[in-house]
Amino acid sequence: MFHRLVPGVLLQGGAYSSTWQLKAGGERIPNEGENGVSNSKWTLAMSHGSDPHAASTEFFINLGDNSDFDHGAGNPGTYYCVFGEVSEG
Image (cartoon, rainbow, N blue to C red; front, side):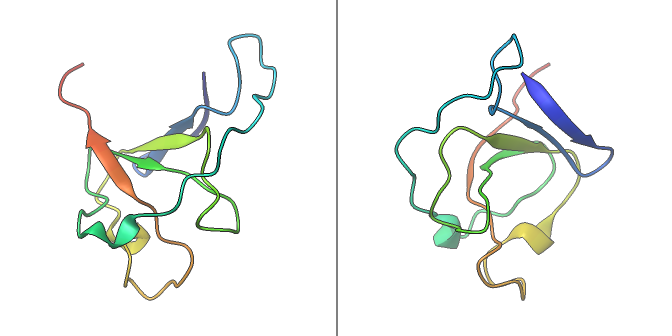
């Protein structure tokens, strides 16, 4: 279920079930955003709260080039790890 849209920036999902029930967070995933892959248009990245090493269920699709979400963009602790890209549809 997608629950957040920021036009031209991102489309976020993964936190809620199809009946709008908040999903229980799973094991926390360490942030690997230092991998050199940029948050460019049509890439997928893990979302997290204030702790960059606490991603679990949420992800977002970059709808624009969001290099300010990258590691080293001047926002320590707020970078997001890209783990895939939209290839079709």
